[in-house]
Length: 497
Image 1: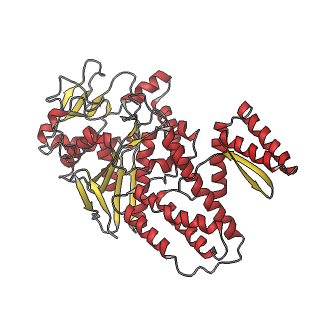
Image 2: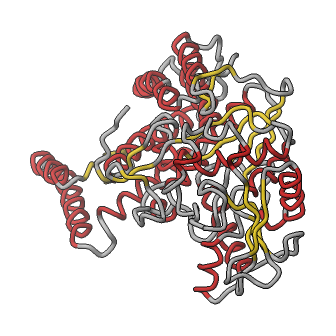
Image 3: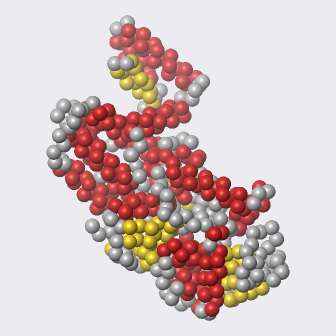
């Protein structure tokens, strides 16, 4: 099955043709580890987790590399503010990032390199770039340590600069808070490959004196070491197109005889009121903020509801809708699991046509530029049919088993719906219940009192009062479910399937 992807470099969809048949090298720019990661980061890494899952499902031998930037101006500033070493700071937030990704069911990359463990490779690449006439050395500014120098890439020596972003070298102003105004540069667009050391900053010995890498060179050196000078896919957030990825292309091709990433994938922003979510703007929610209120599967589902190229607006309303959808699916899966567990064995027979069609739609969506909204939509009809079969299960056991297997296959590709179904459904409900009816609150006491009064009314066979109490609870956002073991109450969760 052919996989088509939108290549930012060519500005069109292309059939992915691996450099080496059957193998894929994938490099994704990772986080700068000075704080907890936010929902914008979560979107990027959930998107590329799906990318690598789909690639592997198609039979490719994938080498997935995602780096950590563990030396940087922001890291140094935060460490100095905290009175701790940059290593202590970055180790802590690398561990936190790993915990967040695990909770979001992102599979670990094959390699997670750090800048600070690749200094020799970075220095060697800079030496090559200088030797080929694409970079120049200037003495460090007045704040630098004695004998230290800066190295700048000279953008004018790379005529195709701007091919990725569509922005020329005269358009660098305001591109990023990392674009520095420096009179020592030959042109404003020239960017640092090596930075002269300053007091209270980490530094390494180099041919240009004590210093540390610039931001862009790190990814060029690490991708080259772990994937080779030319590889298949390079990904990251849309904010990295310019200047970071544009600069990566220039320095990498200058160092590697024109080789570098063949296809570029960039995910759109998570927005709040149509404005990009970012730490610099102060309008972000950390992953941990959101997971304190919603199950990780709910956040992951929400992040996949828009095509990765498009912006995704963040709000309580859309998360609550995702909550309802995920709960509805997990409850049906729990019911299916319970029913199938009671069977001694089910003669499955052929896969029902509706599920064959749904699987074809799922795979067509994911091989069409990783279209996760269409992939999620492919679950709708199977879940509707599963619900109908569970309502009248006699003679439907085979269909239920096939539908359950289909959801498991889809979930493996999407990183969804593979948690223990009954426990996950209860977790989601408990989270909502605790938010809407906090322990010790008057609202919770009111619910418990009315539920108890209704139990007394039912015991007395006063069905009129029992129905009136049910209606009153419903107005308060409470749903009742009567069963052989008594009545269970829950927040009203309107099913969206």
